[in-house]
Amino acid sequence: MRHLHIPGGQRQWLIKRLGKRYTIYSVKDGQPCMDHDRSEGEALGVQEYTGIKMKVVEFSQSFADAVKAKLPEGSNVFLVAATLRPETMYGQTCCFVGPKLQYVVVKAAENSYYVMTERGAKNIAFQGQLAKEFAIPEKLADVQGSDIIGSVVEAPLSIHGQVRVLPMDTVLATKGSGVVTSVPSDSPDDYITVQTLAKKADFYGIKKEWAELEVIPIIETPTYGNLTAPELCKRLKITTPKDAKLVEAKELAYKEGFVLFPHLCTKASLEG
Ligand code: ZZB
Image (cartoon, rainbow, N blue to C red; front, top):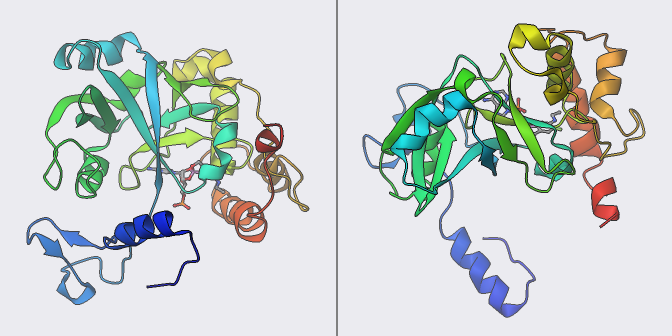
């Protein structure tokens, strides 16, 4: 264990926390599953995400029809987005779900329910994040991504405060929670998706203005200025969310905004 120079009380707390650590776990065997024990997925490690609880403040009609009768009156429902860039949360402009993906509603605590993919819910259940710990979560409702679109959620710490749920065709069912919070200033995928949604709003069945929230500059980098993602899409001539150059754009954005300059203050935090 690393030695941490932290005042007494806090140090004890940290040591307690370090007592449990993440590992690949076999639900079937009820114990950690080491590399050589796996029938597939050898050499895979743990990827830690930060979960962003986005409280639903306005349900689309189809979302309300799918879940409301199945939950107690007055329940709080959260879409839980998985992010690797929690420091960019000031710039959230919408929340993406995969329109063709299936989501479940699971109980997190008294009066509190999470919406995410069944796979994501299973993963957090075994990290003690749901009402029933260390057990396959019981789903209280199923809902298709397309039914959630148009709902309004709170985006914690964001300048915009509340944002719409919008469709993103490239959301993977096999990653995180299947819910993605959109930061178009720093994620090229998010930037090109919101641009496309605004251009083809009718085709996507949304209102144009839902995808037109101001892109907030939050991280200044020497190479790309304070709007890294729009600048990278421009330089690499990326015009659609299916462009293969998005892989390179994401890599460059990570390198510049996260690896090289993680210490840069955000505009929002500077302004208090
Ligand atoms: C907000 C954010 C702001 C993100 C940013 C990235 C960036 P990676 O590196 O490929 O693993 N994400 C999360 N879940 C999914 C999913 N199921 N399908 C598609 N995308 C998903 O990518 C991790 C990032 O992919 C996550 O972090 C999330 O978007 C998205 F400024 O959250 B991120 C240069 C990236 N910048």
